[in-house]
Length: 201
Image (tube, rainbow, N blue to C red; front, side, top):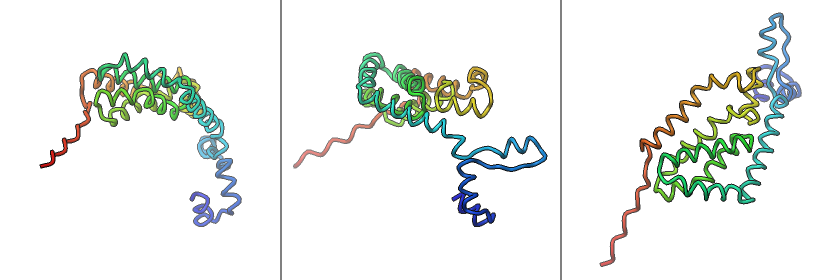
């Protein structure tokens, strides 16, 4: 759509529009700040992150097929016997995916696969699982330097992960609130059992 809009609304040749989409924008001005701001983007600039995501997804699938996640799930199943521990185990599962898988996509797989059975056994709705997976997977991705989120943020900000880590107060707050909700049994919705069918007359 960007290529179509550039060709139709800005009279840019189609080949130039395709080249811009792949290599990014190239504009020359007398203001250095504008040059830095505008001369970026494109598919090429994201290839390293895309490659990292593809490799990470492959690793996540390998861990699942090899039974590694099943073994971890069995250990969590014995320990996570209440909503608080269940929340902590889900967050740890998400961080495990980011740390060893290197991508938020892997963390969503690991956190949900490892703990989903525990939610069903305790009669807790899957939306609580979804919330905790986000707290442990998506939110912790920028905290791991070699994850897709960590690589992207470090490259974009131009600083190392350890330098911007103290400013991730929102991420830490989300984790803290999630754990508090789990142990305080707040917003932990239970599955309602289906009403029993009426006995035939």
